[in-house]
Length: 70
Image 1 (spheres, rainbow, N blue to C red):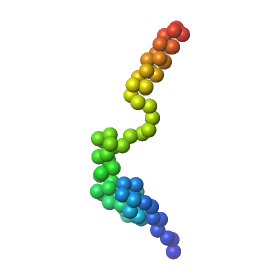
Image 2 (cartoon, one colour):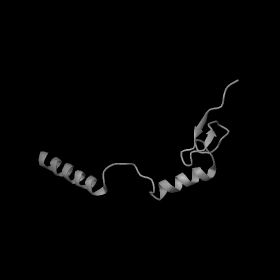
Image 3 (tube, rainbow, N blue to C red):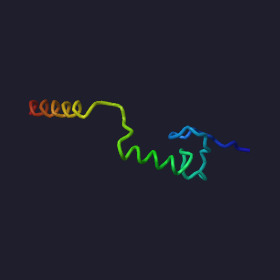
Image 4 (tube, helix red, strand yellow):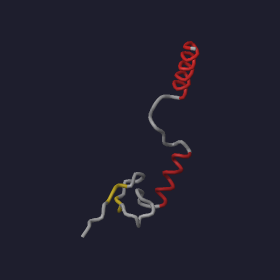
């Protein structure tokens, strides 16, 4: 008999089965799935990295270097 794989819900940490019958996988419920989507959409989550100003400076510097090479 094949054992069911259980994983922690990325939102609340509850253990949940990771099977095709769990329509919310890898989340434990639709609520956790929806909460996660809302957090990404409202930018409550973010990918660690440079600030917007640092990125803009890098883009401007790259553009200046490219123009100098022409």
